[in-house]
Length: 216
Image (cartoon, rainbow, N blue to C red; front, side):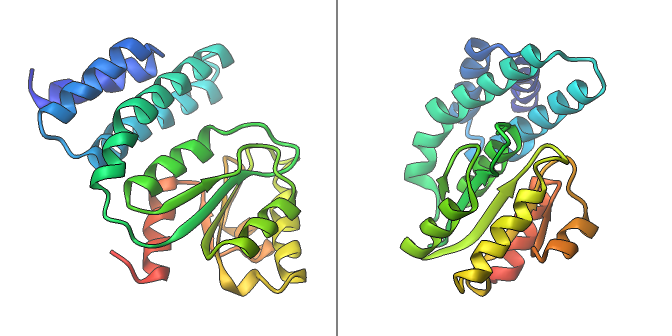
């Protein structure tokens, strides 16, 4: 099967939430010589974006979305991440990502994490329901340059602003680039709360962060 054919098969397996098929096609793509970063950026992330859009349109139930996310996770953790560990060109940049307090959705955060790791960033994943103080403590203890604040709901996105306020209170705000991400986030919201990058699209956010850092 051609690489394009395998990419289509992997895309479909993630959309359908079939980890076994997804693992098989991902391994075949690696064996065929496709770069792991291309697998993430050209197949996995677009597949998860499509699954999310289907859920928003009512075409998928939450169980379908969870199945797709599990297929994505299985491929990334078992096939791609070990390869990244040996092939990624480290940028020497530490990023900390988390879903803000009161929010337990992590699909968007995990996609962003995969993309940044694929580009050689060291990503500290704080998980979900993360209070502002936890973000600040990690930034104080590590040389963190990038902070990703994920929120899926309009009721929790206010926590992004609270994290920024906490960083200002501790004198940490100017040390980091802050991404405010999630479905309800807009450029207007990013400006209002004083973040640096709109993370409504993980690809554009990654590109903008690299520009701000001056890395390729």
